[in-house]
Length: 208
Image 1: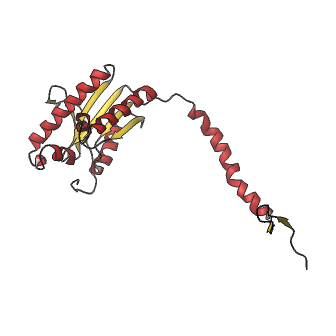
Image 2 (image 1 turned 120 degrees about the horizontal axis):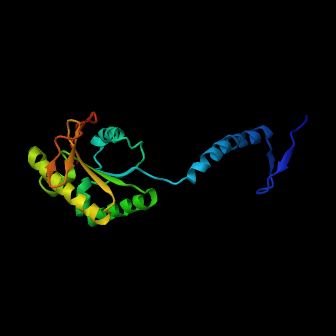
Image 3 (image 1 turned 30 degrees about the vertical axis):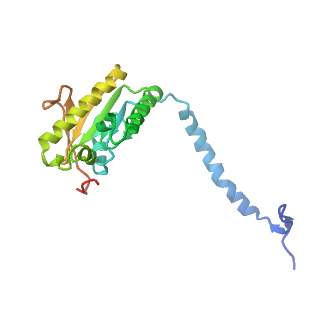
């Protein structure tokens, strides 16, 4: 009876079968991946430039709406996105001063590395962070709720321009009905400009 040839195992000195077919198969994924890596590698050396830096709240209910809205802004998916609870409220040190530090760190990196020329801040209706800071029943008075957001959006606007005077800042307020309205400085709602109406998340849950 002919026995297959074996090679000694260097670690334990016991015979180990060498399967040439399995060895060649193991090399196949690497051989296939190499051309794709070679094609992709030039892009890694290209100069990165984003169209905007986006700050939104962490609330999952508004993500799909915000994605659709940003797509309508013709940014070509070329934007950096940071999410902090309360969005504009994070610039006021809520819930912690570390949130403000995190925002400025991210914006600075986006500005220096990706050369952004615009900041977009997206606040939204029925925000749990705003309710935690001001009033658990804040959303029950839509007019008051919107005004509080406008005030803090304006503060964020001025803070950013103070540090980056060459950057454009756009402020928006997303509503539960799927509408996103632009906010102007001086605590005025821009009612005659472009507005956006999209679909909300299928869940209407209120954030914790």
